[in-house]
Image 1 (tube, rainbow, N blue to C red):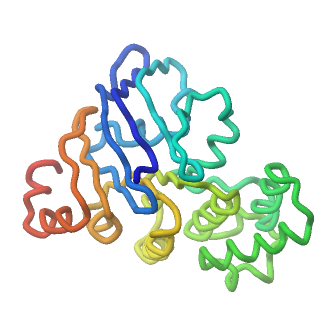
Image 2: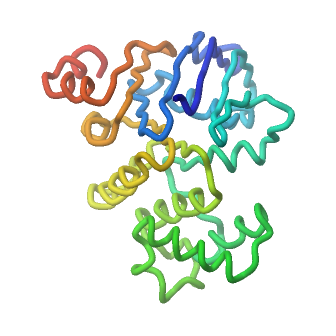
Length: 250
């Protein structure tokens, strides 16, 4: 089963074509990794899934994208699926942490109240669950009302992941979520991503072959806006270990 099906996707910015008729299916409840050189179109492909590209000036696009919600495929352009709902259910975490300029607590509870109109007791329960899931609870439980910006970069990124997960997504999109972190913080994020496996679909962009080897069940290699190769996780690890992928792509 697929979590996202993309057909004939073309994306242009200011009439410069970035993606050239992409066709790909990402498996459900697995970790998919998009790899390729800088400028190959990785982030553009990822942002297409929840229509973030449309926020940028000069965007033009065509093609078909379907996303699985509760086991049923929907076009992301379906009028019944508004942008707010699409971006909640295909939650995104960016390369640089972007916590809300609020307390640690309100970074989770405020979006929850806006999305679901939950009671305080319900939001507090989810707050703890998601902070525990991302390994933050023990680190922040005594300072939940301090600014989120007081956290380290790695903690801020885990808070952003907790926020996205709290909104009950069907899919998590990760755009190089460890790129701005040191190795120790990156490993915590990677371990958290692995813990999501078989529970939720994950599609992420990465520059790191080591990271892809550790995380990927499925990988897409982009080159100049085209799909060069796709691999299942075992095959990807084999070609990384023998060096052939490094020679041909990076």
